[in-house]
Length: 276
Ligand SMILES: C[S@@+](CC[C@H](N)C(=O)[O-])C[C@H]1O[C@@H](n2cnc3c(N)ncnc32)[C@H](O)[C@@H]1O
Image (tube, rainbow, N blue to C red; front, side, top):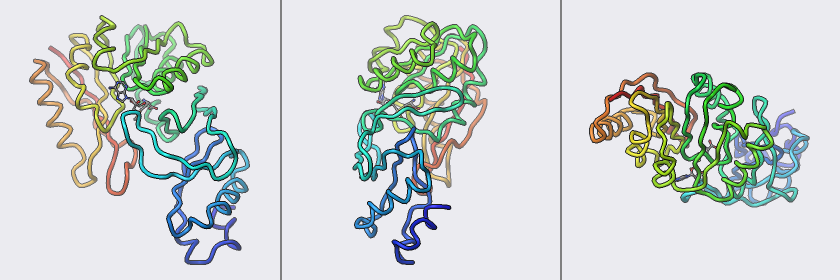
């Protein structure tokens, strides 16, 4: 049974047509965007979601887009209580409170794509690391990785990252660092083989830091977003401009869509092979 079937007796045909096609699930917390026309039906919708997915314990209504430095969104709890949960993904466990830290369960494939490229002995820097999913997936998938540093400015997300490193038993490989990438990364006084920049709305402002922290030859996974009609031009211009300033040469190894990022927009990733 799907959500529409479960609500057939509670909602009119017009209301059923307004139901969103999908919702997000992180651990046992579900988050759905309820259109204003269905505001009075949100309790019934939440109950139906639980009926269709019995593992869901809490249902939240999204009260807007992600915003602010920590990329959080306001949520109203419609059913259940807690918003702290544990999400499982490819053999890893991620604890977080969906109100206090960014996490998307839809990025599992992208995490595997990047982790599959990491070679034994590499030193990896994950900027904007949230509750630690990229760093932990890398350490689990490539147990011979040299070291992975995970830098995050939101203290609550950083605290969860530290807990997640412990529960996934990757303490010897992953080092969570709390701070702003601009200061915290150079302060590590190390150069990296690979740098991940998973902050589509803003990573471009830190490319100078990434070039400075990368070894003379290395890889950058650069995330950005743009409109469907022209996904990569702007990002490529920014990359070339910043590479020139840093006196580095870049070769584009791969460009790809990661996930839809709102109507007609996509989150993208460009993998860069960088040399002197
Ligand atoms: C889009 S989220 C991605 C989090 C994580 N990589 C993931 O995939 O779940 C971006 C994260 O970057 C953090 N952030 C934003 N600006 C930052 C900065 N200047 N330095 C460090 N972290 C930052 C935010 O708090 C947020 O947790």
